[in-house]
Amino acid sequence: MRTGESSSFLIREHQGAISLEGRITSQAAEALIDAYAKSGSTGITRLDFSRMESIDVSGLNALVKLHNEARKRGGSLSAVGVSPAYRDVLIASRLDEAISLDVPACSAGVTDLLPEWPWARPVRKLKVPVVPRGALNLNIDGLSVAGPVQGFGPLWEKTYQVRLPGISAGPKDVIRAFKENFPSFQPAKNRFYPMPGGIAPGEVVIINAKTPAGLICTGVWVLYADDYSFTFITPQGHPESGWVSFTSFEDQGAVVAQVQGFARTSDPAFEIGFVLMGSKEQEGIWRHVLTSLARHFGIDADVSVKKTCVAGDYRWERSGNIRYNAQILTMGRLLARFTGLS
Image (tube, rainbow, N blue to C red; front, side, top):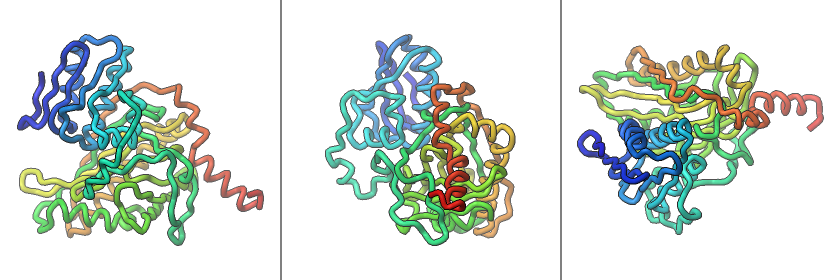
């Protein structure tokens, strides 16, 4: 048995099964892995969600880490007792490929009863409803989302933070500013185009960015959004496969803004690119974004970065993702337009 801080969660292992109780966040990751080791399971380990109150995106990270541990040991995970609403969450994030569900998905309109439900409803394929002026809509329509389980390269958790001491705004105000000004907080080489619905669950954001390898057109899908955080998940072909979360909270009397990426490179070509230059480029982007956010509140502050390699293996079975590579497809489609072949 393992309890979390203030008893916010409880993890129990018994006879090849693990019970998740309470609020599952990042704090549950170590307890889940400990419970898995103590369960002694060498085959399928059942995860019992029947007493789980809630799970946030960091809790999904904990489940991915558990999946990695089971994979290393030659085991697998299945889920029982998942409510229809949280079944939708596992499907929307594509964690149902790492944790098999006990029965076919059936939401039965449960989340329709929750108007403030912060999670996006699952979709089979993405669709851009309207293309904002100036945006190039390539490599989004007709594609599925791709989370950390669907990627190729090593899995990295990168956390960027900036402290905002002395500001009169609270965490909700910081997230509101983040949502409203997200495109303008980007470096000049990045163009983000939210839909008219803004950064809200289930909305698409188009991305047109200049990289050392040329222009790339892709996007993200809003997996989660509430007053204190929001999370983007990538589509197939994006340089990374996973999600990035934006949160704000109070710590020791100061408001903190945080960006946390939890992702792998999506294919072998992007992995080579990230090793050579892409990882450094990415870190520069999120430093710039948080620095811009701080300046919005009149603060000049340094951005701290913490990087952890969660899983160092290469998923060679995912090497075929290269057929969706947005960098390659952008160049090809623009060339076809220029030469009149499309």
